Amino acid sequence: MDVFATLADPTRRRMLDMLAMREFTAGELVEAFPGVSQPTISQHLKVLREAKLVTVRADAQRRIYTLRPEALREVDNFIARYRKFWESRPTRTRTP
Image 1 (cartoon, rainbow, N blue to C red):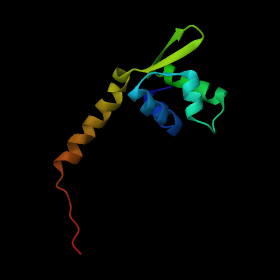
Image 2: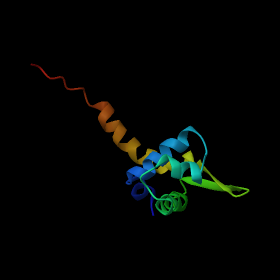
Image 3: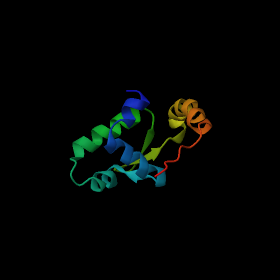
């Protein structure tokens, strides 16, 4: 799955937001999403790993997930092309 398809899911985006702050164990991520089952969280983590947005390492019985910010470079490069467009346009103001 490509990075853009991976980021289309709001649960995965929330996971990345969390991982941008610190590492999380799989169990902590499951607890952070009380309405989502453990197998569903595991599937989201698998998609994030396959898109190379996160890494996982074993620590005894725990799996610790870390954000790979360099994997977001593709997204940043895409947005950069459009950033030039909106930054060069004058801001429109509304008149009452």
